[in-house]
Image 1 (cartoon, one colour):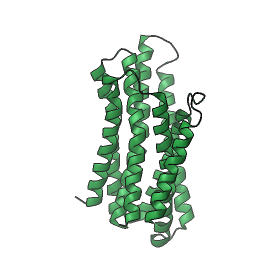
Image 2 (tube, one colour; image 1 turned 90 degrees about the vertical axis):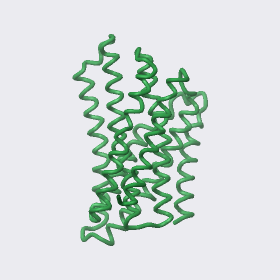
Image 3 (cartoon, helix red, strand yellow; image 1 turned 60 degrees about the horizontal axis):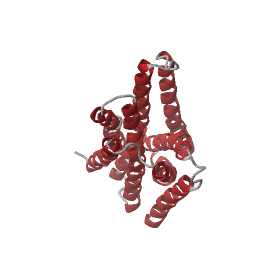
Image 4 (cartoon, helix red, strand yellow; image 1 turned 120 degrees about the vertical axis):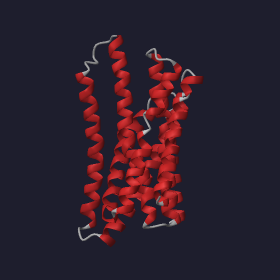
Length: 266
């Protein structure tokens, strides 16, 4: 097996394990402390925003200029927009499923449907996250540098950190809807099982088809940006009246750490 693909698989297994760890809170706790979750979500969103440029878009531009005849700005912009559109369409699909399930009625059946839709929504968002990790590690086959390696590791860490509260966000509501602790944990960790699959697919594609690499990198960046800006940042700003700068400092710290590592190692 290609070493880059193996690393992508190991890294996405790690992000899945952090989801499982978050889901495991249902076995021991009633709910994680909100300020801790806000800080983690803020930190990971800062990492993801910084990584989107230094670890994904910048290498995409460089590779496009070296390997493609099409202008790099067209390839990278197109990939970025398609990545964002993918997440937008995923959200639309979930919203449509909500309407079809008639989840406006508050009854026992609708509560179970809401739980199913929650699992589906987070599972869909985990696909581009796994892809981003896989693409970043797949890049190492053609451009193995300490900066590229640290960038790939940082993306995996950032995604893994935000997977922890995602796991809890699935398992805890399931527990409130009446599922057993074990079943709530099982479905919570299952929401991220797509990440190793998407990670391997992304690494295989960019390792075997060099011309797809710039588009794949920018696609992953677009997906990560929309997840960070549309999902993570609003989520980490909840209840900010109690500790108004906790999430904000998490975002700043995450961005600064990622920027420091990339600039220092680049």
